[in-house]
Length: 224
Image 1 (cartoon, rainbow, N blue to C red):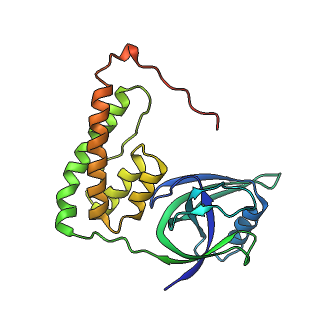
Image 2 (cartoon, rainbow, N blue to C red):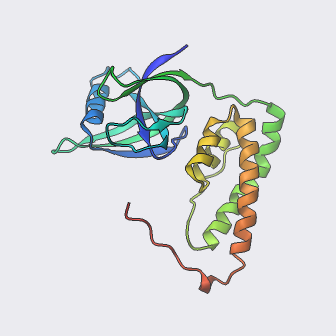
């Protein structure tokens, strides 16, 4: 069953449970925020975040979008004197875009179908939990040893669905790889993909960290 959902294209992938702060400058998205705030308290105040495959977040031309996205649920809203909004959102439910409407509102609207979060092959998912947890801890340790990135890991959950999203959010990957994790059909398949990803990255980082720490140089963050 499809439903109509406001869409917010971004150059990033939102995952269920992941916190996403946003600064709202464009008037069309200010309109969206005002409309969400005007809804009754018991109404779902959310919109769909979908990663851009090609194009730009701003401008009159519709960018090419990935088909699978995630709702951003409003948790905190601050309105500024100049009309901007600072939002704190958290990832909610995954969805698949069936159709995009550019005319029905100032912002994009999508005809979407919400996707269930399922374990999939329960035995495979259960067996993947411990290896993925071990690999994720090793990955975080080796990444920290490079002196470039620190990952603050919470206690990794034993629930396969929750673990699959924590790992997808914490791993330092490019957009296409994270999008692929979001789009996996279930937790068992997502954990299998993450196990392969982490195994690869741990191996690469093991090679990097054989270099003496004095030879490593921290890369300054981009001002963008």
